[in-house]
Each structure stands twice: as C-alpha cells, then as structure tokens.
Length: 467
Image 1 (cartoon, rainbow, N blue to C red):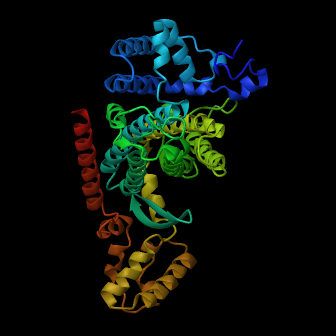
Image 2: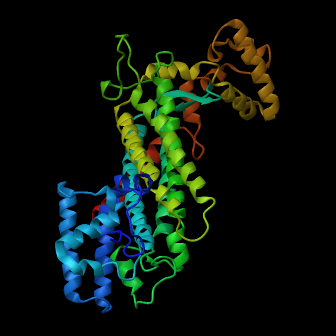
Image 3: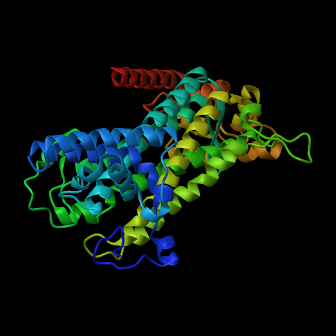
C-alpha cells in the first residue's frame, strides 16, 4: 500500500524518528488563518480561470470556512502524522467535501503555499506590533508632558553629567520607538509580494492570474521570480532584525527602571502592579517586569541569529531547513509583543520622586558646563580656557566640600577675578534646564512642545486607522 501522504512513490510509512524530526504542526498550526485565506483565494482564482469548476470552488470555500470555525471553536483534531497545517487542512477538507478537495492543490506546491502563509502571518504580526508600539509611544509622551519640568540628572558613563528633565528623558524613547516602527514598516513594505503561483520552484503551466490572488490577499504584487519566491526568508530576517533593535531599546529602558527604582537611586517608584516581593525578605519590592523585559531581548536576538545561521548555506531553492524559520520567529515576536505591553504598563504606572531627582541632578557639580558657558558668554573667553577655569573652580568646591552653586563668589574670583555675583543665577539645576533651548534640548518649553506634537501625531494616526 502506498504512503497516504506521498502517493505511489513511497511504499511504507516513515520511521518514528523521521516523523519526529519532520513534523511541524505543533507550531505551524498558528498559520491556520493565513493558510485558509490563501487557499480560498487560490480556489477562487482557479475557478475564475476555468481551471476548476465553479461548483468545486464553492464546495472548497464552504469546506474551508467550516474548518476555520472548527479550529477557532477548538474542535478541530490536528494530526501529527500529517506533519503540518497544510496537510491537516487538506485532509479535513477531503473528509468534508470529498474528491473536490483534491482540486485545491492544482497549480500550487507546499513550497509557495508556506511562503505565502508565512508572509501573511509576519505581516499580521508587524501590524500588531506597530499598534502596540504606538500605544507605548503615547504612554511615554503623556508622561513626558506631565513631567516636562521635572528636573533629573542626565548621565554619561552612568555618572551625573548635566541636569535634564524627566520628560526629555522619556521623549528620547519616543524617538527610538518611532524608528523601530519605521523599520517594521519598511520590512512590511518589502515583504508584501505574493509567492502563490510560484508552485514548487519553476512556476506552472496552468493559466494562473497571479495578480488576482495577490490582490485578494492584500499583497501589492505577485513575486516576480518563482525561485526567489519559494527560497528566501529575508522578509523574516528583516522583521526579526527590526524586532531585535526594538527589543534592545526596550531593554535599555528596562535597565534604567531597574536602576532608578533601587533604593540606592530612588528616582522612580513602581506600584504593586509591576513589582513582586521576596519569599524571605518582607521589605523587598523587586522590578521583575522590567527584568523580564530585559531578559526576553536575548531570545529575540537569538531568533535572528539562529535564522541567519540556517539561511547562510542554503542553495536555491526550497530546503527543509526552512521549516526552522517559524518556531523561533513566532516565539520572538510574541515575546516582543509581551515586552511592549509590559513597558507600556510600567510607563503609565511609574511615578518619579521629584525631590530626589532634583537633588541628584545637582550632585557631582552637574552645572559646571553652565559655568563654562557663562564664562564664554559673559567674559568672552575661548571655551577651552573657560573649561580650564571651571575645572579649577570645581576642584576648589571639592576641596571646600560644597556644591558648586554654594561655593562663595570670592573663592571663584580667586581663580578668575572677573566673575561677578550674578554667576550663581546660572548654577541652579532649574536655571540650567531652562537655558537648554536649542532645538532638541531639554528646556521644559521644548519638552512640552515635542510631547504635544507626538500626541497629536499619534492621535491622528489612530483616527485614520479607525476609519
């Protein structure tokens, strides 16, 4: 008796180990919506072109709708022996409508079928990620507007550098996220070509209308080369690359949350919603949500690396290695979606300790650059000379054990006699941030303007999406 999957060419069933390594239904069952949609589009096109009869096409469409309902209701029985989502759907279709089911696979292969399904799945995943990232941006911009004037330390080398505002700090992540969304949009635009009709690798002799199936599935156009259509997964690589960069951005902020919520820093606080306790230390409040966002970045970067390694040695066209494109990708994009949701929640939940932030902003003589700028603007000194004089004044403050803005003018005049008493006006952290009015600077007015701009952009985009 012939093998029920491969017909007359194979006379016996595969070994149990072969079945174990070959099956993909545990993860590619997640493609069921896309597989059914692509099959319905293919059947409709076959009927339109007179390749199959309208009656058979109608039976196929009805049967596929039934299968979709069964899967979504949880009553569909997936069979591991049928390997993948395509064969499971086709087998059930034959049970429902009989011989007409066999016409569905006319002029297509599992090679172009899976390439089409996975493009559709990745496209849907990108759309969901984009919506989630927009909500994350909104949360950041709202919090930035609320804290446009809340002074905090800005850091380089994790050392206090210059005063900034909490709102300005948050808007930095709005900008990063905008680029993350742009990269995902670029990946979506390039993947939006339809492989269906490429068949196994060489195209087909049947008179297909590939433009019809492409339009029905929301693609911009059919893929132009049948070999490329079934062989490449650069659309997955590009999406994973964009996802990895987005995850790194989330991880950087998550790391800051871990640092800022530590009692040693005490700059922000998270509520019980996004922290956990200790099994032994009753006082603990652990930022586990942020730590897990930080950790999940590893699996997203890992999925990109794994697929790059899979792809690097594959000749044209389809190789079974390409089955490894899905599980890691699905896991990675689900992890990214969860991380975005967690970060959005934490942004909405977090409350800055404004008093502690302001105090920390002035530590480490953070307004030294303001003094150097004052020397340039008021005394006309070259910046390098002003930098040297300021360094000596900072050293004097260190030796006196006082903050820079509390060093007596007489002590400054001992280093530069032309310094006047009004120098202290520029040495407060509030005055420092207010002075940073250059485009992109941390001045509260700048921050309010940018936060409102972003909220307007996001609201407009949401309104357009809802139409």
